[in-house]
Image 1 (cartoon, rainbow, N blue to C red):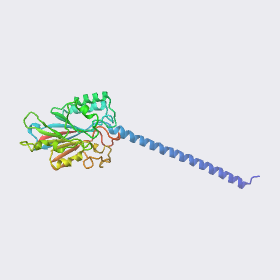
Image 2 (cartoon, rainbow, N blue to C red):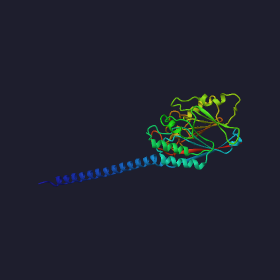
Image 3 (tube, one colour):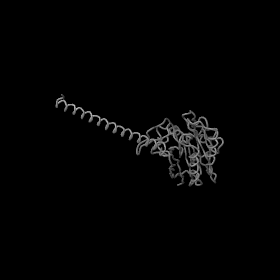
Length: 306
């Protein structure tokens, strides 16, 4: 016969086993809940970074006043876009909306500061024709200008030669507007591609009997090249790209990722002595298809005389 003590001991063991089993079940349920929450948070973060962050188009507008801007350029509107990275988060449908937005502004000048097609995207002939058509559909009263970006090794020349964009590859142009006094626009190549010749881009100032105080706009892809220019020349207004202003950001914090060529100048705007630098936040994405607190954007700069 089993004694009462042994019976009680067996009951206690059974109760302890049941309690342990219940605890294990509770732990499993809690663990599964935590894992589910983590999966939901990761999925939500992915949706925000991949889709929400890439939604919309922000127009960053600034008005600048210059004493050396000719009167016939008073009220000039410049639209600046950069880092399209076609094939990343930008395809034909989005590009068409960007073109419509730019045309709604009715700019006098459009400038593009490089990275037309993403380096990892294999363009089809259909892609090329659509991009050519859409770039040509951008309307600007006085001209459209572009410089090469570090991703622009394969398709850039092929596409741009069939548009009405003037590619400033270490060269310059004079822009006139209903008068005899022009403004100067210069463009340098990509330093990542070892294609920078500053003296060639600013050759205008090497000539005799020219206006040394001419209002000057400069285009470049990598903004850190500005320091080399400022050693010899003083452009009034500079447009650059490349940094995407960090692409993924946190509120009230500097860019989380700084790329070579934009280690010093990566934010949206800088004033260096008498030069204003605008660095585009870009339209597409590079390396990873994510944006945070940094929606796709273009710059709209209005120029006025004093």
